[in-house]
Image 1 (cartoon, rainbow, N blue to C red):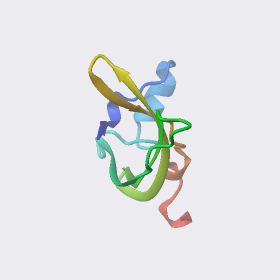
Image 2: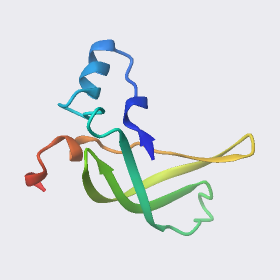
Image 3: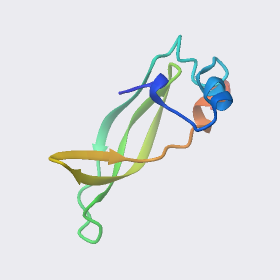
Image 4: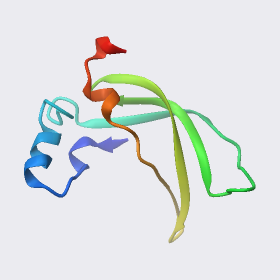
Amino acid sequence: MVEARSLHVPNAMMQGHLQSNTWLDVEKFPLITLKRSARQCEDRRQPDHRDITGTMTIKGISHPVTVPVKISYLKDKLKDRTTVPATCWCCAAASW
């Protein structure tokens, strides 16, 4: 779970647009969630890479996704890092 308001871009005007109802609509939809349903087994060739499958919800719209993650060990914590294309949630739901 991520607070939508916590996502940032380096330009103040773009930041306002990102948080507006045109994109994330953080007032109406404060959370972005990824509910995991499956995880790929470890690949011995790349032990720090995985694919995680689940349902991602942005702006109240849910879609199944599989995202690649890189697992890093940082001060006694595992942390998943990834980039997910945003275009899916910014278009009209009817286009799916």
